[in-house]
Image 1: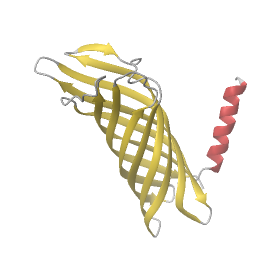
Image 2 (image 1 turned 90 degrees about the vertical axis):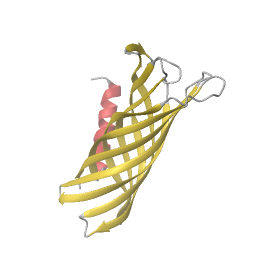
Image 3 (image 1 turned 120 degrees about the vertical axis):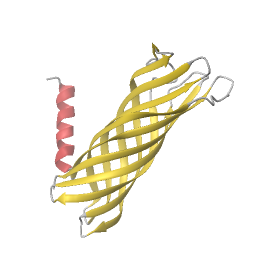
Image 4 (image 1 turned 180 degrees about the vertical axis):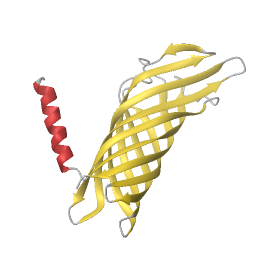
Length: 207
């Protein structure tokens, strides 16, 4: 094993030992593309598309005296899809992004620790790993198109409702709103995503 991977393993192990919670969530994205061409004109024929969402992460307390405020870091996988078309052509976009999410969580409400309501303020940094455009069922690879490739920044806000099944497992359901911007795009065309997400999760306290 190389020194680089060994260092990453040590760092991850250290984070795991300090974390208060391991969590996994899965959900559905409802994405709307906001597109402007080189003249600044928008495309009114674009419609929302559905995609999948997966997340695996660790949560850390920021104050030993209370668990109201915490910091979470996670690996996120998102599908940002959309549809469009004219009277003569049907379009669709299917894109897959992989990245890292950083978030601050605050507990708004807590009942005898069985039920919690948490708010989240976060930002994800991701990059496209695969992108396809379908025009009348003909597939085009758009992974390296300037509007999609590079670094995408995704600020987000959300709310989670959590319930403790027992002291070892909690379940959650939540909603997140986000806006994704490609900060690496150097072309005259602009593309951003508005995303509404519904997700469900499992939470495993580590301490």
